[in-house]
Image (cartoon, rainbow, N blue to C red):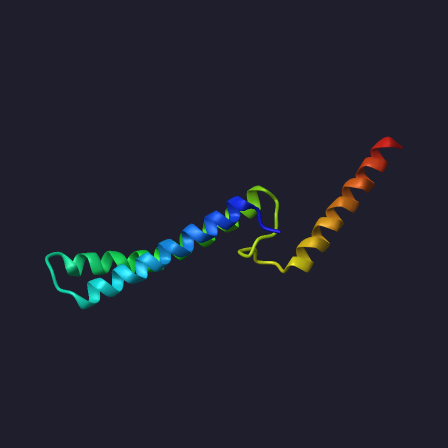
Length: 98
């Protein structure tokens, strides 16, 4: 299950994306000084923020050796790989003891 920190981070990310979409919509509808530049910044952030969130989730999983939604392999492949690594470590330990 997800921890409280993960849920808070997900909620903050969703709120940030919704605010970016609203700001982009407001910039597209209304015309005031600096709207063009602000609209470009909002469009850039609309693309960049989800990519940065994905990179953060991916790196978190790699650094903490966990399977995440951003992992390239399926959960079954990840679990099989972990089981294989555990078996190899066990075999290496038994060889060292002999």
